[in-house]
Length: 299
Image 1 (cartoon, helix red, strand yellow):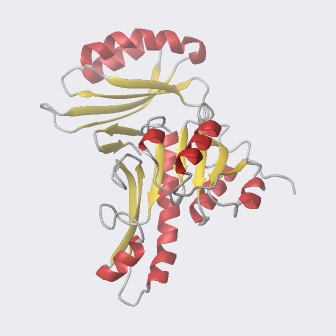
Image 2 (cartoon, rainbow, N blue to C red):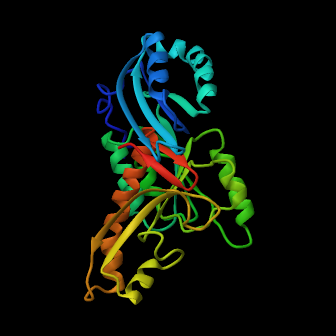
Image 3 (cartoon, one colour):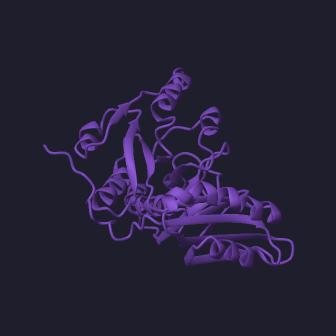
């Protein structure tokens, strides 16, 4: 069977090769927007989109995301960054500039459930997910044929309590330097602190509850036992705190006392796949700024 590939022209008109994104977080004070706008104007850049948010105009944090066009940007990018460092130091900015057309490289981790994986594969194949899926890694062999039908490499790395350290070493060997972000698409393993240090704020997990409710295992059973009337799903960055990292996206759906645990799972699968796909899309489009244990999402 011929491998499936992304629709080649889906993003062709959207990928302006002279476009970049600037993301900034810093203590709020007067003059930030003016300084950034003046800098870009002085460097012949044209701002095409700007979003900003302040936690508190007096003593809070300020966040801004700017998209701009600059002719021959790829050749000017390093000099632009060097020059902007002066402005950044003045305002104590945490900042980054990235090329909009440059696709992030993703690795998807999965166990036995395929619904979140399939949603990402379908969106990637349709050209709706602007990224390159470099590989899928699983602790089970079940989805090899499915993944390889998309022309994507599949790595089966078994994990047990006794072999977890060795398995993570193998995962790092195949991902380190090859991917920008890791997606846990119902990967039913806890990621160790040692692994996390290589991908800070670059591992996205989907948890099958509306966090902070029902942390940990079997959240649908927990929800059923509690008699909830709404269930949900949460996409978040992974930290050392179990299911406690910065939340990117959430959604919910109403349920009733008539729904069994299996029915809650069925309803939840749809929520999970949509929530995770949104979070991944916003991440690869540089729409998320992390501050402490929160996110600011410009969508």
